[in-house]
Image 1 (cartoon, rainbow, N blue to C red):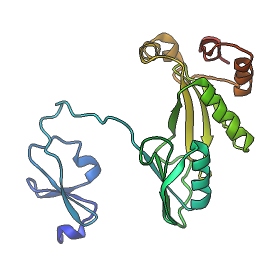
Image 2 (cartoon, one colour; image 1 turned 180 degrees about the horizontal axis):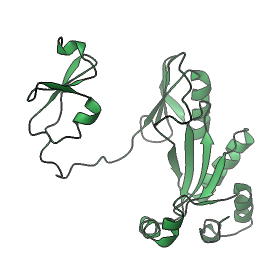
Image 3 (cartoon, rainbow, N blue to C red; image 1 turned 90 degrees about the vertical axis):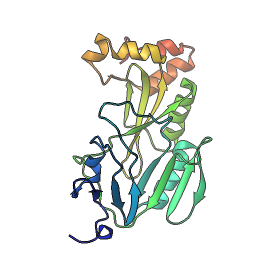
Image 4 (cartoon, helix red, strand yellow; image 1 turned 90 degrees about the horizontal axis):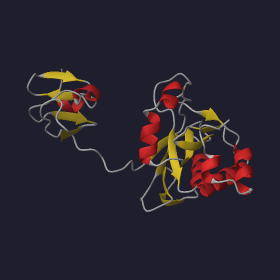
Length: 227
């Protein structure tokens, strides 16, 4: 079958002398270290013990990387959308951040990429949380003034959210947490969420107007009266 160096996308199981897809091999319980070949480099899997044993969770979601054939447009859009800046940028990649993380979004330039089919598997959207309702509404008004209004505005119960599309059609959500974590847990375990786990469509222009006139955050984000 050839050397391991010729099998860059396969994981090698020494104990069984078989080859398997690396996307599925990690799902199995390993009692000994396994070796894999990824792009010509031998790496060791961490030793995994019996199935069902607790694993360590990450401390945060650090960043997202997007590949594009519209590099200039995408970099410009994401800098504007996040009010961010490039920590490093060249004609191949831009590392964009808006906080104390070295990058939150990276844009990579790949010419001649094909458009992703609407019915393709994969990521549906990702989201950014704003600290206050003022911040969420300010971002909405700023993007709308630049000709980029959200295509969907909704009260999810736990959050008040607006959804946008970047130049490549990637979907991104902006949200404000309308509940505490305990309140959100209780809401998601309750009958309202079970009956409608998506939410109720809302009009941000109406909500902004009501909020600017002095209506409270609790009232503007209230799920029971949304829509």
